[in-house]
Length: 67
Image (cartoon, rainbow, N blue to C red; front, side, top):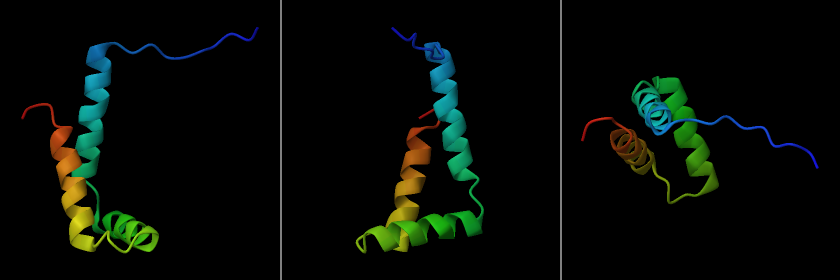
């Protein structure tokens, strides 16, 4: 039977990884942000540019370390 290899992260490491993801979302440059807005809009017309920006801002805020 093949062995399963995985990285075991502590709770603190997982929290820090999500916090870093939130920071990365907050630092998206305009070109990258526009790319994701275009991709979302092409997949589903309900995803307007304002809605995508609001969603990304909300996710980034949820992933911050301090409320």
